[in-house]
Image (cartoon, rainbow, N blue to C red; front, top):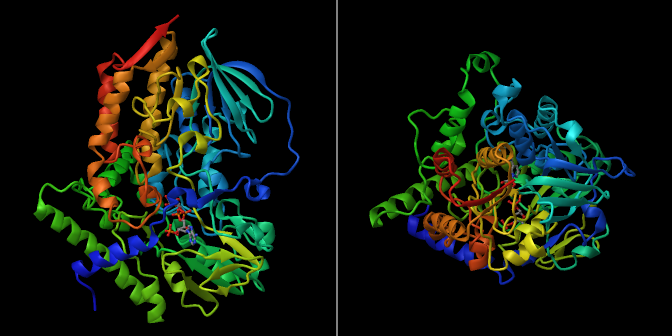
Length: 587
Ligand code: NDP
């Protein structure tokens, strides 16, 4: 028997309040510093060295994930090939370099997720491609646009300073490089800085432990798709039940002797229905198909309801109505709440139908609105809990109480494990410079963190006053979308346009005017209300800054409605042609 909307509303409130905590985003710890080896790159041979590079170049790109790669591709297409790309990892790929955990896969359709498929000529093998294929695509992308000779891998930017006398940035790296450059493009990632839960005693654990983005196959055996044979006689614990855990749990379940899943908040898991790509269908697609499909998908999941639903999956079904929009009146508010409730009831019924034990089924039910956490889609996650070796340890919203040298403790019970996996996510709402890992120094040696001490200030999220020629690709006052690559692509298009104009017109300094930055913030702020209203009823998570946030963090908001709106806005700005709001110095 289902429950009423009123009962659900009350249940949502209770579950939210259980989880609110005064330390908010400060509850997490960084990988670095807790255990040094947590942040080690397990995918490269130790001992890499190379000579330092000292050079002068037109552009330095920071980051070799989709943001940095797309920036390099766009610049190349515009004839700007004098660039360097600095990347911490041992190869291109960003999130797909780091996230090699078992079963990792793209959670949105690969035909709209993988960028520039028409240009590279690549056909994804499945509707939802798996991580090794996406990583291989990133490498192919790098080769296609001839990016490898430009890349400095296993290298981190340590400092970046504006040299006014030469009107250039000087970038210094962990390998002693000194890169002097006209323009910098910082594509530091969106979900790239892994975090650990600040559970008391976490540092005391004596077994093997790692974060999902640093999977150690030398310990588990197997590979991203194969069974992890070295776990056959081992007890494994996993902390977290978000989008990552939903993918990992089924593989751990079939590999480990015993698996303990520590749950704070249940995931919302809809059907996946993956299938191989039909080559005939793929061949039949007409030029321009990808841009059209991308647009169509984003319309379908932001309530714009296109005439045809091209992607036609659970994302588009679930988000066909934008239940987090600002309602016009009480009737619309009630209607949006009803739609949201019914979608979540469908998810809850799916759990009842999938789980044999009714008590476990109850514990796995999510009690929050459909936009409170990123929805997950998976066909093997729920059935994994029917296996006798899989144990759900629900913490009733509190999280794991403590970790001893043997393993996690919940309600006084210690769960000894041989391997502890942290599927605890990534920093999203910490400050921009903290996530970057360096603090650019602009005019008069003022750092970005000082300049943004009251919160970020930018034009279009890409340029900040006091930091000439420094372009950012991020969600901070930029675009955001469920399909990250869509928002990143729109930002990159915009950045590449401005960089090319500057390059062509001998602009040696470019930065926004103060009032243009303020106006941009007002434009973003007006779009915040629907989401803010919705989030205020949500259980904590990275989408609502763990249920907290202040005015400073509020200034980091992205364009909260559809990325298509952001794209139209900046396209219109570009079409005007006179770079309104930007101040320039020409040589
Ligand atoms: P999340 O931040 O979504 O999940 C972290 C999990 O850790 C949550 O379940 C959280 O619980 C739990 N947790 C945190 N602290 C504790 C604690 N003290 N005790 C117990 N549990 C705790 O991280 P993910 O890595 O799962 O996903 C991050 C994002 O990465 C996704 O939202 C998605 O955007 C992206 N992603 C994309 C994929 C793709 O295919 N494109 C695949 C996987 C991830 P609580 O909910 O209560 O905070």
